[in-house]
Amino acid sequence: MGATVLPVNLKLAGRKCAVIGGGSVALRRVKTLLEAGAQVRVIAPEIDSELLKLTREENVEWIAEPFTASLVLGMFLVVCATNDEAANRSAAWASKATGALVNMAAPPMELSDLTLPAKTERDGLLLTVSTNGASPELSRRIRQSMEADILEVYGPWLERLTPIRKEMRKKLEGHAQRQAFWREALNSEVMALVKEKKYDEAEALVRNAISRFGTES
Ligand SMILES: C[C@@]1(CC(=O)O)C2=NC(=C\c3[nH]c(c(CCC(=O)O)c3CC(=O)O)Cc3[nH]c(c(CC(=O)O)c3CCC(=O)O)/C=C3\N/C(=C\2)[C@@H](CCC(=O)O)[C@]3(C)CC(=O)O)/[C@H]1CCC(=O)O
Ligand SMILES: NC(=O)c1ccc[n+]([C@@H]2O[C@H](COP(=O)([O-])OP(=O)(O)OC[C@H]3O[C@@H](n4cnc5c(N)ncnc54)[C@H](O)[C@@H]3O)[C@@H](O)[C@H]2O)c1
Image 1 (cartoon, rainbow, N blue to C red):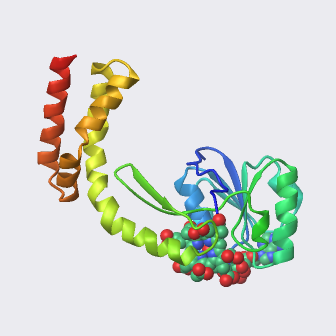
Image 2: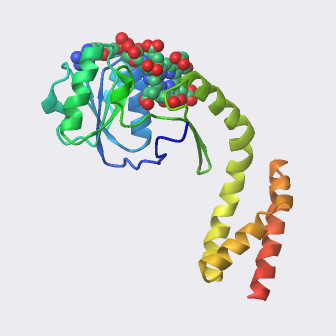
């Protein structure tokens, strides 16, 4: 099967989002949205105690009512997370009618415009895994192994590369030259050192490449 979705990193800072439902699944979604900087409205007649604590914070409001369409007017994204399939269905259709994107955290899943991947982040390196709804538990497992195998190793390396990339943007003119530089700078010898967390040695090789490119150009 070919890919049927477009993976994106959605910027939610300052955007209005609603989560319908107040159980543990809603709580997880609220946390995820807050991490992305969204302004969150929780719509549910009753909510979990941890979620109640969160609603006392800035950027979260709780409307203690069952879902009605007027409550999602102006929302950018609506998450349907109640335990009532019929309620999720009508909330999804009403939200789509206002132009909002809909994420189904609970059935009926086929109304979802997007699924949320498992994610892990360190030093600006974000890794996500999705099975596009087929097995969230597998996503969770892969996320855990990526944390140990990839993030731990490449997160600190990304932190070192970020300022060097800025520097090289100024030094080298044109996309072709910058591409050639990065192909050479992150060669397999460098990447092998990074894999062993020998960041100082790896950085020294990259810096050598900088001086070579500097003299060639
Ligand atoms: C990745 C993660 C992100 C997050 O939630 O933040 C996430 N689910 C996680 C955990 C998890 N979810 C479930 C279990 C129990 C075991 C199992 O069923 O496998 C576990 C494991 C656990 O609890 O630890 C049950 C479950 N999940 C969905 C349904 C509905 C259905 O399938 O019908 C049911 C059945 C409910 C029921 O039985 O009633 C649906 C979705 N869950 C998604 C995301 C989206 C697809 C992601 C993908 O494609 O991989 C999607 C479509 C919703 C969406 O897009 O929002 C997070 C791991 C975070 C981490 O640890 O890194
Ligand atoms: N996406 C996932 O990862 C995942 C994981 C487990 C379960 N689920 C699904 O998510 C559903 C919710 O799980 P939960 O553990 O949070 O449930 P829960 O039973 O703890 O909470 C349900 C919440 O929905 C609210 N609610 C019910 N009807 C409503 C309405 N008409 N309007 C607004 N709110 C309403 C209730 O007040 C309650 O706060 C489950 O039924 C299951 O299908 C999804």
